Amino acid sequence: MAKLVFIRHGQSEWNLSNQFTGWVDVDLSEEGVKQAQNAGKLLKESGILFDQAYTSVLTRAIKTLHYALEGCDQLWIPETKTWRLNERHYGALQGLNKKETAEKYGDEQVHIWRRSYDTLPPLLKATDEGSAANDRRYANLDPRIIPGGENLKVTLERVIPFWEDEIAPKLLDGKNVIIAAHGNSLRALTKYIENISDADIMDVEMTTGEPVVYDLDDKLNVVNKTKLN
Image (cartoon, rainbow, N blue to C red; front, side, top):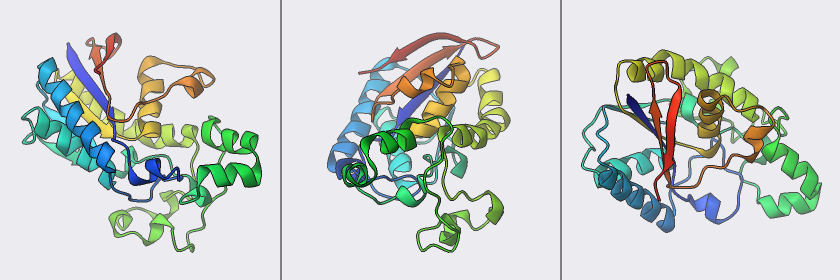
């Protein structure tokens, strides 16, 4: 039976300042580092031995993975970084303060942008200064697939091919896998593997720095789910 562990990155500097982050590459806060280190301690106590690690191309997730693996003495395991595990792209909302945005557009509209399964945020143009099209880490991607904004539905659509091509085969081979990523990319994977409805996924939250452990059978059905805290 394979084990799959999700960890949402520790608190970031923009989590702390209440800003929409998305694909903007911000660092962990001091508290976020502590959360990631504590995740490593919990994983060490669990005794899980990993074969493969995955993370996004964003610093807060990469550092969380490294702190967690260092804490459980497994920093050496193979690691793959991919843009497909990035946070949901918040479009033109990225960098804005959530409270101030709610005051400008109304609480209901901001709630829809944040929590609706298939409503897109205001989009960022490829010509905008903050566009990921200007970021070297995405230079090898077809410009047509670099998003200007995403909802959870679109996030799921770009995460699942990586799951099917890379992650699932490892699990089917009996390998234990750890994924350190983001609230929405992990919610997308959670929706997929737990077969959660479009409506119910809106109530699913990922706690920063909290390892979620799945036991999966040989068909990748969830046999058990445990949160380490």
